[in-house]
Image 1 (cartoon, rainbow, N blue to C red):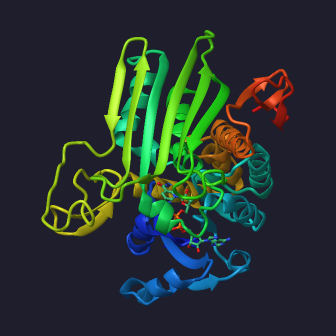
Image 2: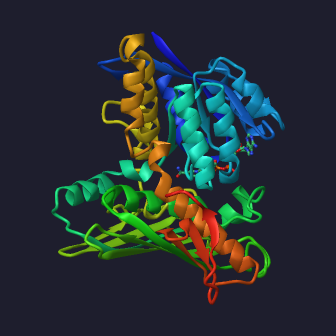
Length: 422
Ligand SMILES: NC(=O)c1ccc[n+]([C@@H]2O[C@H](COP(=O)([O-])OP(=O)(O)OC[C@H]3O[C@@H](n4cnc5c(N)ncnc54)[C@H](O)[C@@H]3O)[C@@H](O)[C@H]2O)c1
């Protein structure tokens, strides 16, 4: 049977949620397409800061059955890249994605990066160029695009049932345990919008694009809980992005994010959206999809009151088998199918054609992540200016001054964040 040998850089919360179930199942129950036949997906190497979590996993029943090489410390990622893995998945904190991805691509590994891909367009340009030069895929995980409700939203928009989006809001609120515990090691100087608003930035950009252009980015937020009130670490952020349709009408979206919601909030993560069109309104709530559950002494901590089993759930299937599945897992399996298609989907002579076809998939290819990265870069620059005492900045996209031009209130001379066209 054909095999894709995989390396994992970063072995934290998202590995546990979505990668672990893929590797545990797809090693012995391979992915399959008519072009490739069965392909086994095997976790062969892991790199992380301390190696503690992966060592514990190696001691588990699954880890003992399917051991991998466990690298830790400052050079862990580099060492992993010298091993014979075909694919590298990067799930480190977001400001550490670029170096790991660049080195992996240079080592000619296919790469899957957790969102947000990278934090600047210059970094994105470099990864895109290197992926082309080295003949590998470089992709980003945006699982919300695989949510059936979001697939339907996009289908209705592309089919012109929902006409001309005008504005909308999205909110994604994470509990305090994320900022205070889970991410405490790397949270200094960071903000919740870069980490989670990107889910909705991509949903908006992919669903309602590509025939529009990003026009400007604004942001503000609050500090004082996770870090000092005048420091660089943000509790919550309100981001506004404005697009322009080809008919010159504007569309504006407000995205509110936080990682200081109470830990006993019924759903743990709170997510809702509303999009308004010329002829329609779409309202959706991630966890209020019909299930409401109360179990003495177990909700809302261990079990959730309003769970979203569509993203990721463990099930006893009607046919008797235990499973873990959902769109958070499906989207990672799709990436492996794309890699398998490039490597095993036909003769070697047409590998480049298959590579080009897989790179043309705009839902996950980094070359299609320009608007999201532009917004993240702008957001980070606006927040940095606020920390320096200059609140209320706006970034104009593809204006006369350059690709990304940051304007401070009362100052006509912009700071150029990115010269080229976004
Ligand atoms: N798709 C999603 O819904 C989703 C959810 C959560 C997190 N994420 C993304 O996944 C990434 C990781 O998040 P997480 O929640 O798993 O974080 P985490 O803090 O739980 O884990 C981070 C891991 O990265 C490792 N690490 C840190 N620096 C490293 C380095 N320089 N080299 C190698 N390993 C290093 C740590 O040892 C740890 O194993 C982030 O980009 C985040 O945005 C995505």
